[in-house]
Image (cartoon, rainbow, N blue to C red; front, top):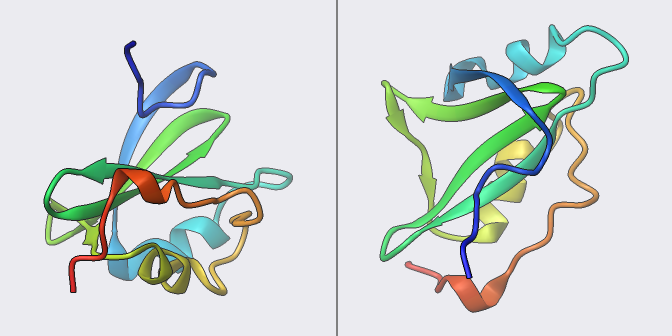
Length: 101
């Protein structure tokens, strides 16, 4: 069975956003856009965070390198208080990763 990390709707643009710019980027999304986060498992390393909204996929990076979080809790902490991001549907699939700390 094949899996895709990209949710099923069409992606017109893939954007990278620096971790330090996440709040301002999400705050600048035009209304009524609300980004939905999801994570990709990076085997042996942790979880890579993405945001999805109509037509775009946002990859979170730090100094141009994808941000990898060692636990689901750290992903939630990163997104806590970020404007225009709906974390209500972000659920861990714990069978796919282990806490790395």
